[in-house]
Image: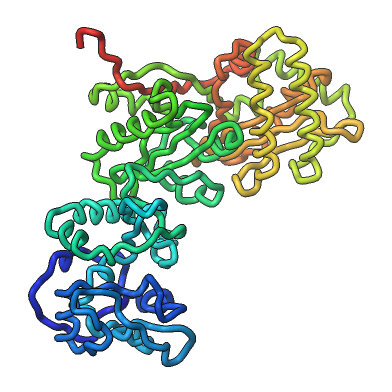
Length: 490
């Protein structure tokens, strides 16, 4: 609503000390506040009797606030445009001439008080029409501010004001985001990638599981949603009646380290709201360096998976007896097959998906590894998302074509500046050596990278043997965390 043109001293009222989070320069550029499409807009400011007296003393015409018992201000036609404006607002300067004594209704903005959808309970929300809200809705500072204001409104002095002035609470609005609920979960979107990755970069871990891509490609299998809890970004994955966290809470830019435990506890409370009442609640993707912190805080820390990390140089050169069979397989494929290899592009996608379905059906028919068969059924959607949205996810890949059909493909992307992750690889098993060829050539293309991770083996023995056969330089362990289970004796 802009900075005050004049300052008026008067007796303080409850709420006068509420902080304003929207910067003045944003207000002065805004074309939303203080303007209304119709004269009787239900969103026009409400003045309590005490606020009315102050506003009149500050120079506002009493005819604009006709009810001594308090009520909505009368709007006036916009002098240079369509619709109506608050009479205290100067559209030429963007200033409010009673800014220092503006009512609680205005002080709360961009927060809005409203009834719930049934018209009974009271809600506090952020108005999505505010440009500042639109730009900062994902930041913990904004939601933390909103929840602090919600707590203030529960204090006796302000509670009495709200009880005595029901007109302060407007009807339900779809475009106001409720913030005084225990946790407001937002769906994870592809447009969130940049700022989520900035949080991941601030808490680095040598784990492919701790990447945006690592969760997002499974978005058709899991329902991902996030919220800020005590200044920490918390991501949740729901499947059926269950919910878990794929990563530990990530500190936001204004996070207080002393609130980390509160954020973890709050995350478990969110998971306890799932249909299974938290039976599957856990935090995955915990690095070895983070285990001690969870242990000291009293959580149960359990081994979960290992990721296979290789020196890129080893995979490119395939030197020594340890790689003898791999060299033979690579040479055999190159000598025996007539093929083309290209950067994976849109023209390959349908062929890749067709190959995947063929590979999946073979796995299911063989049935030698029930877990592998089940995983192959579940993973089709992940391959489809990765292939069709690879550009937006920062992924690249190779496709090998034989006789006009895709015979193998691979996709990957950066995990850390010196660590590259190979996310997906499918090769026609009838083409001997093709898998080795794809893996080696894809690693060769990652110039400037020191390490390659092939992620974990999903608990499948056959996949573990395949990844071990490339002689990993190290195994990077990840852990899961649960709330401790108390014995019947406590």
